[in-house]
Length: 166
Image (cartoon, rainbow, N blue to C red; front, side, top):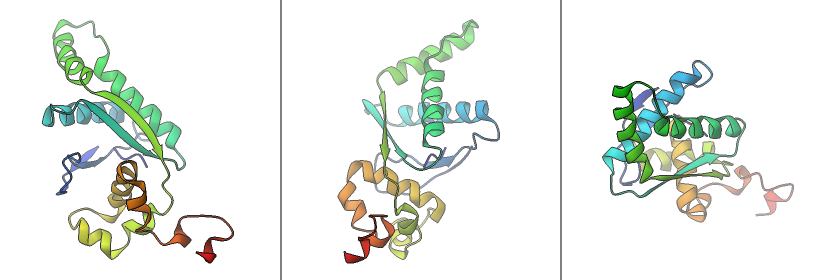
């Protein structure tokens, strides 16, 4: 589930989460790439001690397009520009991102929407909209898959025709 235009902060106890935001690449792809690359740079500046960045990407429809958006945003950070002033700004961006070797992992997103609508999710993250909680679940699945999957009823995981035997 790729979320990435307007910024809304979250109050999470996780140091890796600096906030949730949404971009709308179907409305204006170039703007979405710009917003996402600016956000990536901000995240790197907020946490300069981070030596790598790992992006959890849901495996649902649109994941190929979301991956392209993320790659284009990282590429934008390291692109060369002919304007000297822009080159200085780009050099700062390149230096910040060079320390951060981005990795993109596709994560199974089955049941993320079920958990995000659950009362336990809203208790754990009271200041985050249910629509964004699915993205939180997908990111956490990269960190601790079993810890996230146990929160979801087996019937919501799409385990196949024998799922009701669980």
